[in-house]
Image (cartoon, rainbow over all chains, first blue to last red; front, side, top):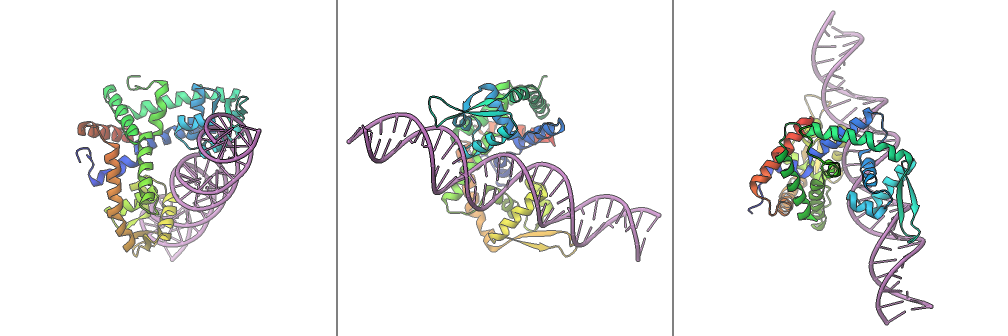
Amino acid sequence: MPNNQFKKGELYSFITGKASIAIARRLQKKFNAAGLNLTIEQWSVLYQLWKQDGSSQQELCQQTFRDKPSITRLVDNLEKLQLVKRVPSESDRRINLVFLTRQGVKMEDQTMQLAEQTLNEALTGIPADNINLCKEILQQVYDNLK
Amino acid sequence: MPNNQFKKGELYSFITGKASIAIARRLQKKFNAAGLNLTIEQWSVLYQLWKQDGSSQQELCQQTFRDKPSITRLVDNLEKLQLVKRVPSESDRRINLVFLTRQGVKMEDQTMQLAEQTLNEALTGIPADNINLCKEILQQVYDNLK
DNA sequence: GGCATATAGTTGTTTATACAACTATTCAAA
DNA sequence: TTTGAATAGTTGTATAAACAACTATATGCC
């Protein structure tokens, strides 16, 4: 097994992804401290809509790596918060297009600033080359399992 | 900002930790395929007990990076599955020590084999040096946020 | 000893995820 | 053109996480 570099005692932290969990928790705390009533999961959906407003729920599934029921419920909650609005597609009535409301658009600046802050804190003291290498490795892990 | 190596469009995948999520999903599928009625989260608690049987719930919190209510409920479910048993500490009656049952002990071999398989699949084609570097970086990210 | 405080664990509530089963619409082939 | 398969989305149910509020026990100080 040339590629298994993990001793038994080290398996756990890689599988649980404690680094990304720590990042997400830190960002959530920043949201809360800023009085933003928004979960990281909801933010991750808005994040895709800021890049491409009017995505279908199906597209949001692929973009955020979630299944259809998860997106249904996240969009439900984002609609309750009046941050997005479902609009049935005119060309295909099966499809819901999800659009940002004015309030949803407004969330971008503040939350992206907090997200960048969080990453700066997370990556303090790590050389740029190493960060890029790490990103490539994690991408390959993802591709290996796709 | 010397340490922010992330363009806006790349923030998302780092925060969501899609690599570790993919690993966890793959392992869960292997559990299901093997007919093991066990979640990854339950497995992560057993994993700590295999290393140190009779941990308190508090210790399990620290070892698995979870809060107290999460551990209470995971141990509840593991008890229902008859994989662990709570035993009140004799020296301090606030404390529950959590012990593996015979069945809980038996789960180790099969599940650890599936976990190692999963990691081998995830890390295919990634040089050992890079894996170690990646581990160090993720550890530093975690330490930065602790 | 008695009281304040800290510690260990539980319970309630909301949000999110996984999986299966379901409805509605579209599309394609007979 | 109709019928069967594929696609988009929803609903039900179980498990899990975060947070606040709670109970019970232990500790330390007067």
